[in-house]
Length: 123
Image: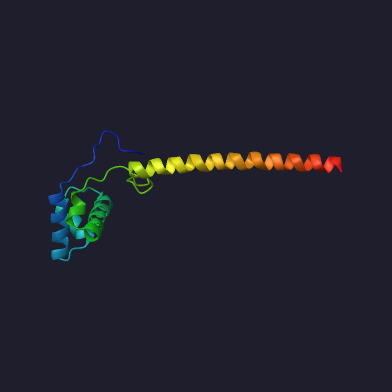
């Protein structure tokens, strides 16, 4: 069953950094950290643990700056990076040239095949 009428809480970067720094400084595990910062968790401890775990992973991989970045949606892992305009134009031109070359070779092959058939019938 989905969440209806409930908005996700947005935490500031300062809060996230504070939670992670406090957790690491006082050697708290995820359960202890959740109990300390979310007394009203009411059976949602696992959700908060996953949230803190994700913050810690981001902090370890990217530092405090990583927690300041907005992370929404699926991200850009599947998208190729934008190409420079000149490079994109060159690739389009090369693609068109290669398509024309393929068409030329197909026609040439068809002509050669037709000529061989004609020479075969005459003999």
